[in-house]
Image (cartoon, rainbow, N blue to C red; front, side, top):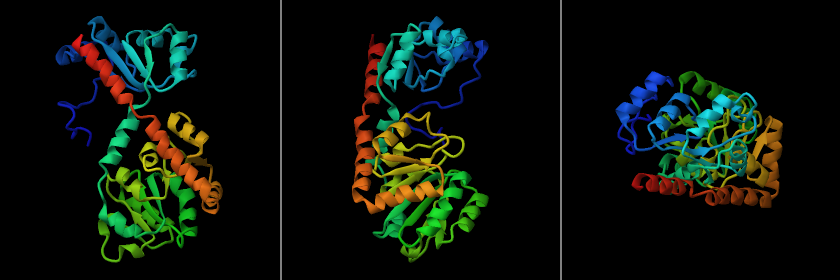
Amino acid sequence: MRKNYPGADYIFYLPWDTATNAKRFIKIVNPALAIFIKYEFWYQYSKELSNRNIPIISASCIFLPTQAFFKWYGSFFRAILKNFTHFFVQSKQSIELLKQIGIEKATLAGDTRFDRVHDMTQQARDIDLAAQFKDGDKLFVVGSLWPEDLEVLAIFINENKNSLKFIIAPHEINERFLKEIESAIHVKSVRFSKTGQHLNTYNALIIDNVGMLSSLYRYGEFAFVGGAYGKGLHNILEAACYGVPIFFGNKNYEKFQEAKELIMRGGAFSVADYSELKTTYELMISRPENYLLACEVTKSYVIENLGATKKIMDYCHKLLTA
């Protein structure tokens, strides 16, 4: 999927980070500028680019005290950072950590993902089947569902089938997991690919395709984003753009700055199990002011954090025209 992107002329995997590969690759590409995103720090590539006096930018990066760069044994890793021309970081803490190891060439810019997801909401397509399914009812959108999430959500879905409708988008689209979802939720459900007439009579719409989730959040009053009970939380900004309260698991979300900040502000909620999900949801329903506050928090949080892309691109233009 990723190679079908009109914004680049060539898209391919980066060859393994060896001295030979780095020299060959950079000689062939002959870049005027190299940009690495977030956690991408490669020793041989950064060394070779620096040796050739090619500017290297790190965009949307985050630094934490637990990383090897800031440990007593981290001289090898610090050497990688010394090769970079400039860092556009997501947090003040990142700037302070870089200063501690003698790196001053850093700007607090934020995360370019905010700009990307905001643009996506401005261009979001109407999905007629989703609108027909919703039909004016309250809707709970479940995005990037994993089996671990299903264990918690199945009970919640079954208990709220008379007051809520559910759009469920699995993380992996395969027949085995689709059937597992269908057997776990004891409600009238239909797959997106098999919808017919009277779609509004169903309780759950299961999305059995890819590329649609970011547009589906717009139809919901609530969102649950999967992954945090397992390998890691998926993108919650896509839901936040539409100003809805967001729920997710409590086990693996802390490396995501936006998740921590939205929890602190009252727009997102990490839940340990079904009981916590139920309690938090019922607080929203019983106290409308809580719901309205969460909606305002998520939407304003995205708006506040726009602009990182422009800061980085302005710097790139200066470098390229110098």
